[in-house]
Image 1: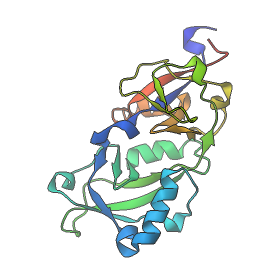
Image 2 (image 1 turned 180 degrees about the vertical axis):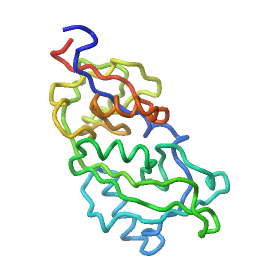
Image 3 (image 1 turned 120 degrees about the horizontal axis):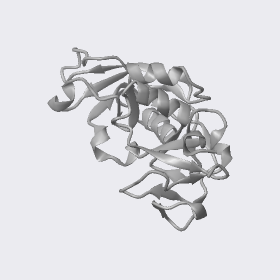
Image 4 (image 1 turned 90 degrees about the vertical axis):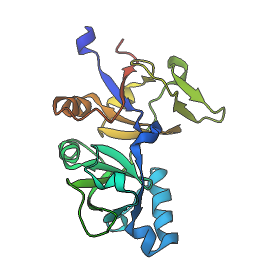
Length: 208
């Protein structure tokens, strides 16, 4: 097996990047704070939510966010992706992960922000991370892990379980990161949409 044919996967360090977090208010929290925060808590933990629970409108809090937003960013704790990214995601196996069309409004709460956007929630999990064959991560000593602030390709090792569907997932007990298949990452790269994903290649054990 050559280097070019070895199976691989990718990890996104975007959740660790503070520049990906933007200041927005969200309709479901403004309308019912307790219920809205409970839904947000479930999405952050990777628990399933129904389509009718997801936000529909986000309101910019600062003038800097009135302009067109990048292809992936976090708004008040929710992941938002551009229509271009969403279209590629929808061409792949998302499993129970969800994409829901949302509207982003400027500070005046009337004028739409340029572009079309989708809210992305994660509810698919795998258990393929192999800590004793990986580097470039932190262990919290209680079975929880996260990436280090500085990363390189091939530091994270995954078992062959990572090659199963779906194409986008969270790793159990691995915080502040999400993972994607090589086929999904390749599609994003071909469309020149990976700039804000902070992707790093993962080794698949048994394929080295």
